[in-house]
Image (tube, rainbow, N blue to C red; front, side, top):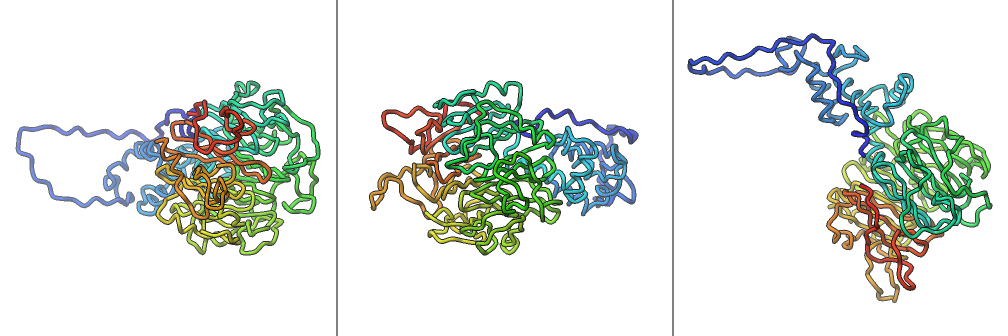
Length: 537
């Protein structure tokens, strides 16, 4: 269910302005006279008649709200016509302009905005730049890049999570730490609903090695698997296991909308756009000093303390944050700079979030960010794709295996308008606006979807140095809206493709049941996309 329709009440008209009488035209039998062409002005400050609907602003407000206008369109109306920028004399704030009231009404449709108190709303407005149009842009940006309130699939390290549009959660695959949440440690080869979550609507999920985090529509976080926020992905410290989802008590007072599990740390994003991190701070790498077993969230200090963040993405010892500022969207990075994956033109670590300045030089507005194990990617508003970091196996898509320490446009996709990007361990997928899927990078475990067979060197799965159309997904005749792939250096990768109608297709490694498909004989993987027996629509 889309955030814009989730439990949306009927828009209420504002009646504090008296209704104007409607003049009825009288039909006469005389010839219709020829009228002189009159120029209509849209200034609104001379007389109401100069703007045809200015006598009934409540109708105009209804049109603006019902059409779900973009915040930029509302701003353009204010810039071109004083009728839209003068005080509208509507509740709840009589000093707000008609465009501002329309933006506020559209904000109130959002599931994460509705339960906020007046004080919380004003605080969010301040953080966004002092305008309800900017708050609306912030909320819409989060919906676009994180699939809030929509179906989604997560290809975790050895296990998988699928969330329906109604908030029902299915899990399958490896379960050695109880990460599937079924109360056992037995593997599941078919999608199985988590029964203990009955009555709780889940809107977001994150999967790490031996751990799962689930976020409800009330902002509460449930976790199962390894009871630790900061264990290493492989050879962990042997923490206790939780085999059924439990409420994370330390996050009870934070309304969470997204979680990201990296190696040695976990990050969560609050409704107000604040980032909190757990663990991996013993040497101050994330701006605070903690230990591996820490269970308390710490606010991410530095440049993002007063800038709202709409999306977070975690890789191997680093974090990317997509921020929403009055001047536009931007990306900040923090953590380990090995391979140039922080995007600052160097390979140095950053203890506090630092703005990636290259996007300004490229004149690119970031809209979606993805953090692979050792490389990262961004999709811009104009559909361009940028990649940077460690270029092994061609995962950056530039036709070579060289590292890039600053974002670089993937020129091979210059004729493609991208809307979504996903990254894993040296692999990258891009989804275009027409639903086509391109992939490049490491071909191990058939996770790229090309299934090209044995190459000239005798390798079964060839690496792909430049973006190639995934023809096997083209053949399913379904529009792909989301790709998820394993982001782990210790697990064989698998990939999910989710279609607009809610069908889920899987390919890649399936030795633990993570594809949700029964393999035959000695099979350990599937080279071509196969339909998973689950409907996420």
